[in-house]
Image (cartoon, rainbow, N blue to C red; front, side, top):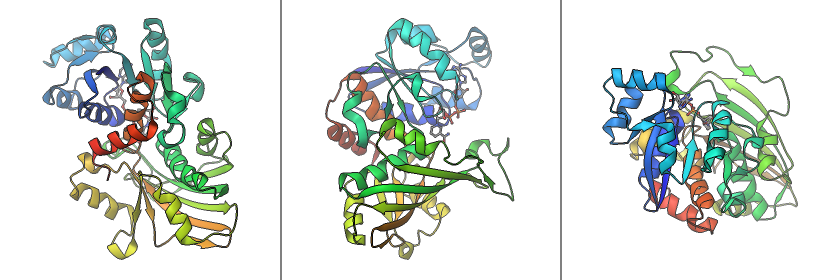
Length: 337
Ligand SMILES: NC(=O)c1ccc[n+]([C@@H]2O[C@H](COP(=O)([O-])OP(=O)(O)OC[C@H]3O[C@@H](n4cnc5c(N)ncnc54)[C@H](O)[C@@H]3O)[C@@H](O)[C@H]2O)c1
């Protein structure tokens, strides 16, 4: 049993906390944040021990009648590993504290590869993270790229891949604060950062991405053109994708024709927040023409990194040295069939 802390109880942190809480080989020792509103009050309702990141936050939490279990330093005393889910760049600063205290840590995809020197994607490089002191779980888009291209690579089909990413404008709960409307905003640089980011896990991938921000909040949608090593068939490519337990085929003829219908299905399935941990890839749209492959899929940006984070915890703490076993255990615990 390993003791785990979650620092930053936002979109990703609250999901990581719940996911840790349902594992039988790790214990959530507490969560730590600077907020004192409904978000942290829900953590209290769930029975999580709440710690404060700053003395000012402690005052505010106490004023809001939130029972505080201690400071971030107190929490770090109790744990084997920290999952830092604070916003971009804050985790990079916290890292110095974790290092000084000799606590293992995981950061999320908003941080740079150099923050940890290791970037993680379970089906690609689990074993390389075993017993390390730190890793970075790559971003939602990068995770989906690695899952799909790694499956093609395993089947010795992948030559090179070119993808266009339609990125959600903002997270649903923050829609009142910003996000674009009645427009689409292409990123100026090609490649967009996700292709190079995938290479931080697998330097041998020949991958180029371009990205455009679109006016919706549910999920990202990717279109891929892949050059295969040889002429292949749709059946062979589908078999390759089936080797990933975290790619879910979806079909138009089952009414799954858009990201909102997919979201509704996962809500109906009873997943927390309607979360889709899998990459939802259109089986009937997928096309193979000789040595060229075309497909599209949807990425639930708020959910896809959650199983990856649980696997990263097992790898770093040495709870499991075999990636396949950890992935199976995580899948079972989160209802990934
Ligand atoms: N939102 C997504 O779709 C998504 C997807 C994949 C990866 N990520 C990455 O996950 C990380 C977290 O993103 P998020 O969307 O969950 O952010 P968020 O803004 O929803 O949550 C961050 C939380 O950290 C708290 N916080 C801020 N400063 C803090 C401090 N000094 N100490 C403790 N807590 C502090 C905030 O109050 C907030 O509750 C980022 O690296 C991001 O790039 C986000």
